[in-house]
Image (cartoon, rainbow, N blue to C red):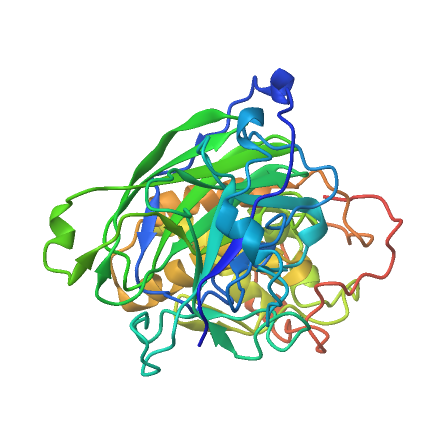
Length: 441
């Protein structure tokens, strides 16, 4: 599809950004190697921000891509060094004028730079691979080509997929670094994609830094990524305006490469994908505890008329909950373990339906509900604790409606339970009648 392309790094000065280096960025768990998603990253990674290499044919431009006011950790003595080949290629007329595709919900909140951290050269290449079956000796395996978020835009490939990578220029020039500045910090998942052509074995070391400080536990190896692999980091408490940098460096003579037809001598980095951060955080709505929901069944069925419609029916633990008192019955479940999950899970489900909730909370409710219905193995105790924490997390945030009076005896008799499905209509995540009313627990 395309021939090798070079992308030169821009000219930046080293800045003492590290007065704010007293921070406690930590890794949640360990880095995850994902070898199943391959090039199908859409809907999996990078909803907030994504960077993919894309250039054809061979060319070189002054910089990869940066946002406004970018301050890089790149050593000052390494800049302004232009590889002679890159200088010559500046006169080329590229088919794709942009070397990278940058998309996502909040691209204006990130800056990026790809460079080779070596005093002899300040350029990173961008390779365009050939698609499967195209021939030419640098084909990739089926399924590994990255989805093309810039498809058909001026300066970008018209193809729905485009197999490409940054690499570390000449063979001896490592490490290859991918650096992003995150203007609005917080918790984030950052995934880095690695791809090479089939039959060429590349294995690399990697290490992650925030403001030039190594993140504990965020280093390791990614072996033989001709099938396309991601290294995924879940980072906690990233400060605002933090510089997050991944350094990669080739590994020589690794056992995983012995069966390949060739062993590569330079490093690749084939995409950066960010989810989370405060730039893309969902607005947090209120939550209420299971005590609130037990005592306010007329909110559940909207008999009180404070929502656009009833929160019912609900599916939980294999049951279809179409009456408020059936929901209250779950809220009154006894015991720990699965009993606690039933209580907290139902309360969390009501919070999600009424006010919205993060996807990971939805996923946890659904997983526990399926196990509860089918008798499968599941950590009900851990899930119940997590959902309890969620239900209490925004209990101090005012409700967007005037809450009705508590009715603790509403479900105490069979007669009271009759007809408690309440006012039907669309489920009311935003069906609030008085947004200025006071909170009433």
